[in-house]
Length: 152
Image 1: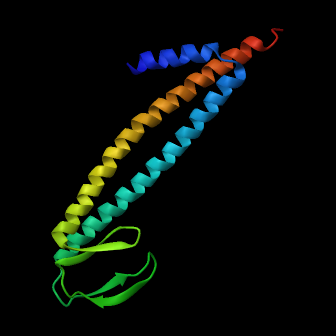
Image 2 (image 1 turned 45 degrees about the vertical axis):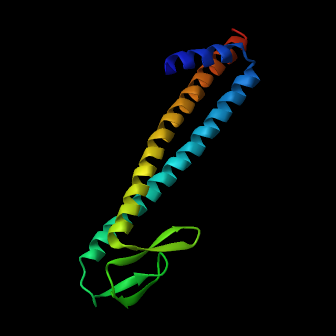
Image 3 (image 1 turned 90 degrees about the horizontal axis):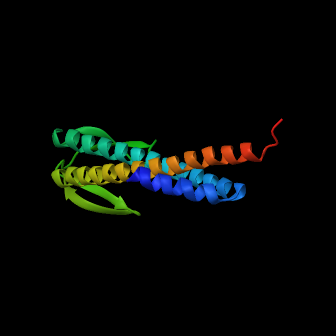
C-alpha cells in the first residue's frame, strides 16, 4: 500500500514544475530532520528513565541509614543519609513531584519507557515515509533538470 501511495506521489510530482518539486523536496528534507531530532530526544528520555528505574531498584536494596550522594543537579551532589528507601519523589514534569513507593516509581518509569518506545516506533515509520518522498523528489528533480539542460 505504501508503494501505491509512493507511486501516486511520484506521478503528482511528475506534473509539477521544477520549482514545485524542489519545494516538495526541501519540505520533506526539513520534516525528516525534525523527526530525526524527535527520535534523538526520545532515545535520550528513554535512556534517562532506564537509568532512573535501575537507580530505584538499587535504592530499594540499600539499608536504612546508608550514606550516599544525593544529586541536586546533573553536576552537583551533596552527602545524605537514606531515611526510607520505600518512599521516593517522582518528577512528573514542569516542576511537579509526587511521592510514591519505590515499586510505584519503578512502575511509572516502566510505563513511560513503554510509551516512549511506542512513540519511537511510530515516528520511525513516519520518518521513513518522509525520507522516501524526499528521495523520490530528488530523482524527479534530477530528471527534470537533466531534461531541461541543453544536450551537447
